Length: 482
Ligand code: ADP
Ligand code: MG
Image (cartoon, rainbow, N blue to C red; front, side, top):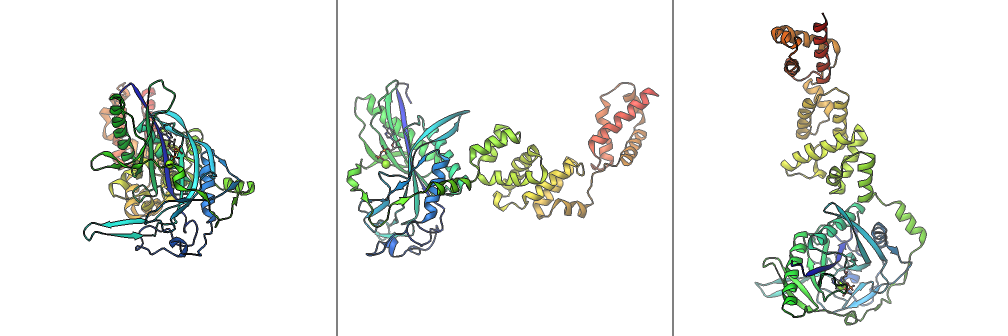
């Protein structure tokens, strides 16, 4: 981008909630059923069918609102948003308009080694629409209403973002948040997380916002960035040529990497919003909010603090563990057994992730259970296993899902830590390499490593290296003083 303009970006994100049933009826929210498998009179908007609010949806909204430091509205109402489209059988979508459940929050985004606070304007509850499917071969259109009535939260940011990369970092942080809370799987490919991006330019130094366009339905982090880059270039050349940006709604064509006009910008008056008379006002009691807050899982930022301050991990290690909530949960379970944070983190993020990756497995399908990995680390710390032996036990654990104890017994692996046995190994090695030992005793300290290596070799890697090290130092000291 040129230096003359600054971009201003605000995102509207739709998150599909991980409830069993739809927002106003008991039909399943499952993804991937047969077309129109999960429908009922409410989903179809049949005359006389009445919506009943799903309590879980409100709980999830409160959780996300609290996690993003929003105020929670006590007196809520649902509104009808009218528009005509075949995937919307009632002719209106039940949403919230003037009374969103959450307002005036913020989200901290770690971006390029700095923390940016992005304002959250509002979060509201609404229902999803169905899906039109166009068959170009037969020139017919079909409608699948499985998704109609699936609960969504719409999270509207303030126009606080300044670059496409920042917008994408915000989106990742939001996705991480909903996943940690368990309110959504945040799966962008399946459409559980969709993003509309608003963008305008203004001359650097100008405080007033320029005219914005809105790019609809971006379904990957990469597309968000690329669509915004394209829009910045397009708007820049318009402004440079002295032309105006038209406020409109755009679609991003990822194959051609361009945005295309979809429709003029709609005004809220176009939707003829009014309170839905079928749904009573929703009053949220303080006690309920407190109860929900009390049962909320630990959030990414709280985890980061815990991992770096209490567990002594680096910020980098913390970020790797925090990439997915499953990672930290696994780490925690390993730590619970071994009480060694650094080792638990290393074994999980290097060894285990490496093996999983090589075998195209996810952590959820890890053949090694966290308790067994914790037990393995404990065996190293208790000096039952050397680091080298532990690696081979780990390999066997990954292949067989057996516990380290079972493998040690099966293979007769055990570290030699008995002082008499160690001494015997050292004595045997010294007599085998007596001239080298004379040289070492006469001052050639570089031969120390040679002796450690030979003793380890003699024990087939089973001797405790620390004890071997000490025993050799003792032997040299004794020879030198004799
Ligand atoms: P609407 O009611 O049309 O959806 P809002 O005012 O609620 O519009 O804003 C929707 C989104 O657009 C918000 O995320 C907001 O931050 C963003 N936005 C508003 N004005 C601008 C602007 N001039 N440039 C970029 N983004 C903007
Ligand atoms: Mg909007």
